[in-house]
Length: 417
Image (cartoon, rainbow, N blue to C red):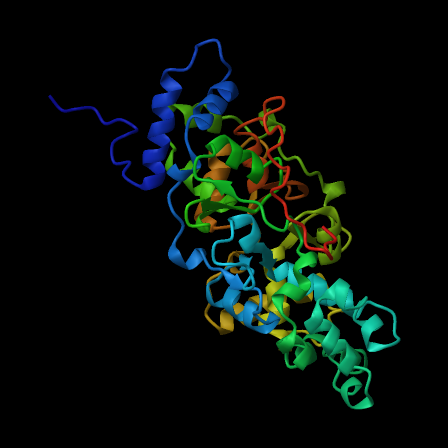
């Protein structure tokens, strides 16, 4: 007799093995539970230490005395959007809470720089948004003191930008950019300074942090060593789900149509169109629409903001560059340097009657963070993000986190988070 193949046959990846563990737990759940309740119970029973480890290149730490220029170089070299910041002044026996200052991001660096450039003219200190050494850190305060001289003001990147329009070119070659330390902008990070899970915390906790609590990635710490053991991203969770296709628990959830799940969550009239609004609205990407219409011609995401710093020559005047020109410039840069990027693939879209499984397969294969929902003639109807998908996988039980957040978010003194 030939043994009939099953969904489990050939599933040998770490993610698939994890999915089979969920399957075993799924099979023993009480029959009266809803599928979501079953999944909640399954994920609550699995420790986050079971999640496959990230590649070594993805678990990169940046020292607090690293300059902005060096931090950008490190992030670009390892193709990362963010990395945890280690306090070099912390004692060797410090706990993880005292060891890490926060998460530094490309977006956080650029937004902080733009914030400084938009200050009113006046003394160098006020122009750069500086309120004294206590508020900004000694390194930036020292830099500000040196900016009051005519000699320095002639080379001030913000002053140069106002006359030449070459803001980012001037900035990235300036002493200010090369000498300002990551610790000096530690209160300007775009999201929470630092929040980590212990290896014994549950999968459910991790999934809720990545969805309802809007975290892009969750560090997992080893309490014994006080170091980061793993970093779990939204993308890694979506890849795990893709590897679980064919398993009963996945199919019962993934074969539902987007419209049946209430997706997309973000409608066209809520889609915003600029980096500054991304920060204000807490979203990581927006479509670029054709003039006067609802057809999307491209997508700008928070990850693309890195090109302001790693390819500053592309932007002669960041205040007037259009979204369409921005897309064209980035695509030309990527093609010239033969770099693979989702930007070169154009817009990725789906329809409301597609299943969640189909969307997951697209997102994972294209390595993108969002997909746009369009109607039969291509008009934009909304956007679905990785966070939206994870939020449909589990729900937060009443009082689930309790006092979990108390004392685990050490805010820097100058924090505006």
